[in-house]
Length: 269
Length: 261
Image 1 (spheres, rainbow over the protein chains, first blue to last red):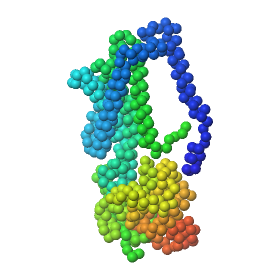
Image 2: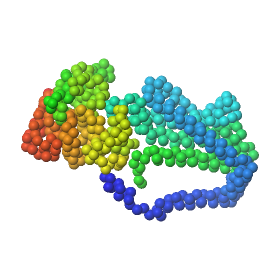
Image 3: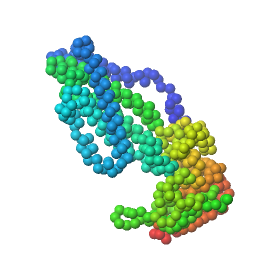
Image 4: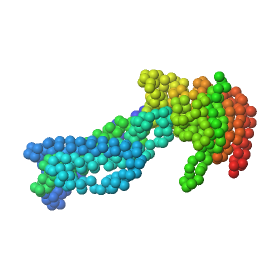
């Protein structure tokens, strides 16, 4: 069995084939950008509706010089990471606690479901009224948005943990704490990390909504600012940068996931 | 010494409350004992309460009446004197094989180095040393069961409970693994209770076979397998006397089925 697996790994792969796919993706991106640059002007679409790619680049450079762009990017990025970290921590802790106490879970589950369905970003104006135009409202919205998918994923993992593995640990006279740390917690890792991946992308949405509604800093603020000036290019650029932040966070979680879940065989296509 | 009783079930019954008001009797006044170093198999039709016996002896469940005695002491909860193994190997996928073998030892106050050494020793006995750093997904079904046995023996239990450990394997792997287990168990001189529905397996591996009836489970027959090669089921299987016992068991089980039908 192992010799078969080793043989599959040892088979040399032509480097050309490994590069073919990324190359195709890049060619596709280049085609889209070229079309974006030339098609809208050819159809007579004005710049303030769809700016050209070159306009976006020029506007990006101007934003960097005149709008303190770096500070906005750093603010949004750091707030997204902080909100994600706090939301993930609370979500995971609550998920494990509820998973360990079925009674509390049954008592609270209707409310958890209701809060999970409620559009969390709609709470943002409320938080602004309570806490004012500062960092708190957007941070709380982000924490709330990240909290639920992670809570639900962890809870699910606690339910589906292998009862026989738990019994095995109990048969070895392990304490409840040992059963948790040695069996339940590690067996929840795949679900927790899947939750974190979802949370990483939602964090950017949470922070953006918070910034759109209040405050004078962040890429969300630049979107409303650009909108007020009818500066379409600025809006496009801010969206682009928000996407980059989201991809970076997602990538970081995926990187951690690949290392933590090394023991799960990956399916080769 | 050899005659000392390691495990005794003293008129043990286990009833479960069913949905509604009824009581469901899994085993009824079950009585048997296993001597130290003996290899005893329990065979019976499916649903005769074999797994209930295992849970009672492992201390994961309590009898409704009667007593389960281990080395003369009543079983009141999970104990480090019992090792058990199921059809599922229950290896933790996030741990290497060596760390899986260490798992049972982690419940004890024991220095890490000693635990490591103990696991290495057990891996060697189960001929798994070269797989110590692999992860469960990299092993074949038979290798995984051997690793599970190593984990079970690592805690140096007084008795090992095997609940159909070979039933999920293909027939060739099964034969080789039965021999591997028989050698390891004979070498360690450990008391073993094997729960199985495979009559051939029961005769070729044990000193004694207990036949259970359908639910509620009772012992309907006891067969002493007085044959050589307990450490090699492949050699014992073709013996004419073994064949006779297998045929006899087949009939016994068939009869047991009828009386309870």
